[in-house]
Length: 154
Image 1 (cartoon, rainbow, N blue to C red):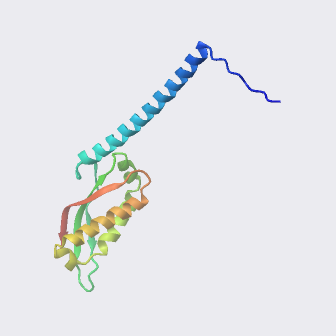
Image 2 (tube, one colour):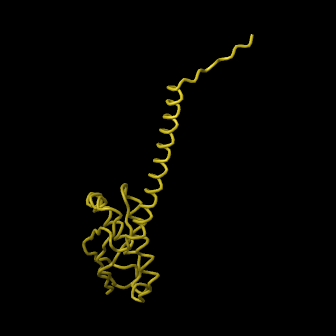
Image 3 (spheres, helix red, strand yellow):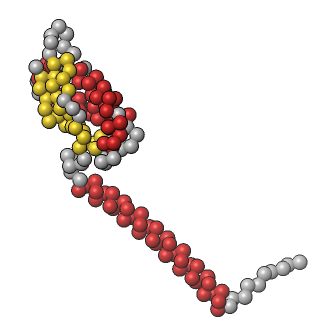
């Protein structure tokens, strides 16, 4: 027994199938265009936001003893953090004690001779350590850069 199903194509069925195909095509095209525009916007924002222009968060001054053995050397520094978004400031306010502790610990590990030499690699490394350590504890957003508006070794 060979039964075949016959589909009768009425003008209404042809129009319905054509409308469904057009709707699927339109939705797919819209999705692709929206995705491409979103990616293009993200690339444009990254390229047009120069480093140093993001929201800032200033920590109070730090005065710490340095790691030099047998001497009484200290560092006085002001630290400013550049944030990925302004919303990160609220989390930094809540974690202020933790952020200050992280920063003090990293500053105290430094030696006066290294800092006084003015080596940009030492300072850049210190900034990177501060940034990475703080980013490890943040849950929302991140620190983009660390700046030292004041940095005095005595």
